Amino acid sequence: MTSNVDFTSPNVQFFYDLPTNQTTKKDAQNYINTLSVNQLNTLGNVSLLDIYLSKSNIVEPHVHQNASELVYLVSGGLIVSLINPFTKQLINIPVAPGQVANVPQGWWHYEIATADNTHILAIFDAPVPEFIAGSDLLRLTPASVFAHSYCLDETKVKEALAPITDTVVIGPPAGCQAADPRSSVPSYDANEPSSVHGNGWQGWRKRMLW
Image (cartoon, rainbow, N blue to C red; front, side):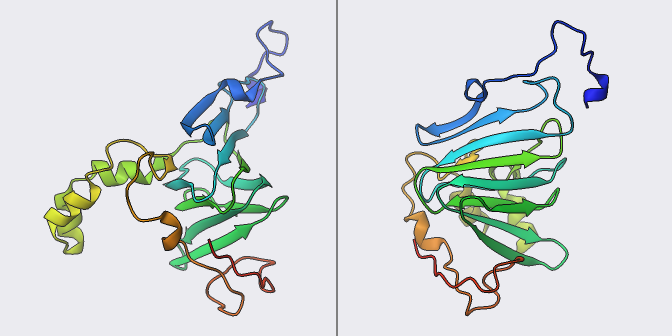
């Protein structure tokens, strides 16, 4: 909060060069720059992720436990997906350049690029955005707990989760040998009422096939 900033101090900051704080990098086309109060001490209750993705790359499923996220698409193509914990409904929102999608605080969500050179600004109502990654939940929870909780085969759970050895952030991980991730991404059709949700999308007619 800016109320605690001494604006007479020689250390007060009004400018920051965002690319100098690259906090996540998968490769030259997929990376994230971060701006928070730790980089720019005059920021109030706001922070920013500057995200670049190539087609079919994903910001892995996660939650921000301390902030809502406003996703603004600068260029490329994007699908923002979130689960409404009140309706138990998966919401898929196609976003075009100049459009936004909002993710309420604490909601499980992920973003998938539908085009190369996708550029996203993710804006948070907190001075430092916090992040709980799905990959951490999967790799740190014992396979026996998943097996017991959901009546699963523990051996198969261990086998399925074994490749997840670190926090992913941008997936799929480099060198992934799994099936083409695009084959598992849903298509969207306004003729299927349950497939697309959100204000303004009721008349959306373009079918997105990767």
